[in-house]
Amino acid sequence: MIDGTLIGLVVAAVVIVFIITQAVKIVPEYERGVVFRLGRIQAPKGPGVFVIAPLLDRMRRVDLRTHTDDVPAQDVITRDNVTVQVNAVTYFNVVDPVRAVVSIEDYRVGTQQVAQTTLRSIIGQTSLDDLLTKRDEINQRLQQVIDEVTDPWGVKVTIVEVKDVLLPEGMRRAMARQAESERDRRAKVIHALGEQEAAENLGKAAEVLETHPAAMQLRTLSSMLELGAEQNSTVVFPVPMELLRLFDAHGSSGERTGRSPSTGPEAKADDGGGGSPEAPGSPEPSGPEDDDGGYRI
Image (cartoon, rainbow, N blue to C red; front, side):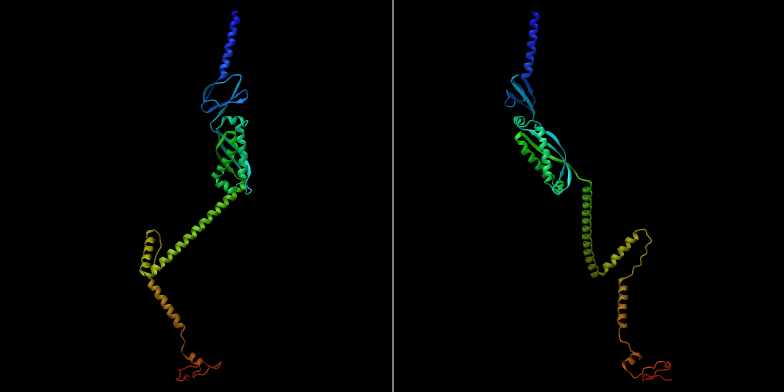
């Protein structure tokens, strides 16, 4: 009799412990408990300690923290027919535990699949240049589209970031050549602008030197001083500009004198003067010239 009573007490204690463990639930701050009583949804429980009916209620825990899911690399053809590999990362959290449990079987898998398909769709509508330069706009579009799809599930997508864009090797070389050509163009334009400014300044300096001849002499002396400061074997012979101008003026006067009309027997013969033309083969006259243009023997 005593043994039967003891066994009964032990069984009763086990049943009580089982009921207590199944009835008493502890939910942390970042979770909520969604309770189904006889298959019907109840208000979410938690955080803290609460009691449910062990055989009538079934509870499912839902994490409210932000989840991070990597979107695998997707082979996408952009709007300008360039094949790229794009991967991204998605940040989302549950805002309505009841809808996250009732509306979809697994909200994490569903969000990941929506992120993959949306990434392929948005990148396919974007050109390569926009994909590389307008990354923030693409991220915002991805976040808006994915959030609209997951909102009925009680899931809020907060951030979607495109992590990496992998280009084909040929496209990388083409872009490198394009960047190099652009740099060369900028260098040539800058060099041409520098030459233009230098020419304008040299023209102004020439006008000043022409107005003030002494400034040219000072500039020559300054250049000689710079050459003398360096230890080299350069020998400089300064020539005054006035001497060069004198030679130039003398040469110009000589050219004008050489072009003046000639006077003499040849001119007189050409003009039909008193002299007669010499016959071919005649002996060369010798002796002094007469006053009328003839020769005395």
